[in-house]
Image (cartoon, rainbow, N blue to C red; front, side, top):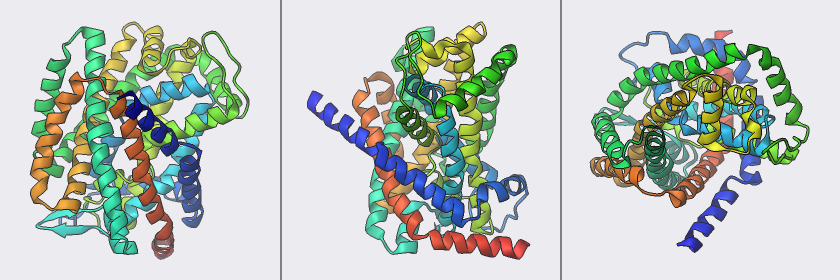
Length: 442
């Protein structure tokens, strides 16, 4: 077992190593240039599309707002709490600058992959399906690569989308309130089962209510702390920018970090958090009721901004202004220390964030997984997948998951490879769609 764990850990390090990071960021930069810096010229327009009432006769099953909330509920997870803390603990405050870079570049990536998801989606019996597997097959004629993506995403849905999230909730509630893990698992199983059995429409309705609520709750608590510590904010931002390109010296329990470590942890955790380029969020956006693919691409572009620039930055600033990033702690322990120091009972904000973020991630990844198994084995297998997915929520809550964590990192990294190949191969389609649309508007 130790040997298997070691092999998986090595695969995880390779999957999220420098080559993958360069590949992800490089393609994001390339897409930024060929779309004419879509992050800037399409940002305000994306909000207008998001809140505009669409006609009922548009193809799709859910509104663009619901699609964005579903995608955000999958992306905004424990990575926004644990991932940020890990990046700062390993790379210092400068890691946050590189998380911002991934978000800005990732906006172009999300725009492109979700544009393609709508353009190449299919409809069967009134249900819409789309994502990398479909634009690999229908756009590039590479069905075998679409199958590879679907297999990797299906495996990831059981890991990072399910058991890892349930385990994090169970641990957080046990450590804080001594709630038995089996009880947490049972409650999660029932509640999530009731949501996902209803399909994308019910998932989207729950996500569109839950995402705004959980972001407001978490950001509200964070803002209270930052308002109390507002005199330290200029120093915090200076620390982020300064240490982005300058080695961070060891202070207190902090071991110090070289620039390459700061860049690596910042970019890796940023990509892991907002999922731009992984190929998961296009599956949700493909179900949107929209008349033109480019419009949903613009809406999807807001995802990395909200996830990383807004939510992750809140966590980062609280950790930095509290000063506990020098303590030598990491992960959820570091976040809890920071919030508790900032406000009495602050650790409960972190617990609430873990519970809400993980719950939302589980329901969204159930949809990603069922679209993948439908692509691989047909509609009849979706029902079986849902029951297996629900059962594994309980399993994830009560077992030790070190191997599952590492295996999830591997499958996430492997998902990105066929998706990035598709983005590169279909980049001319993205550029043409973008140029035609904005030329006609002008």
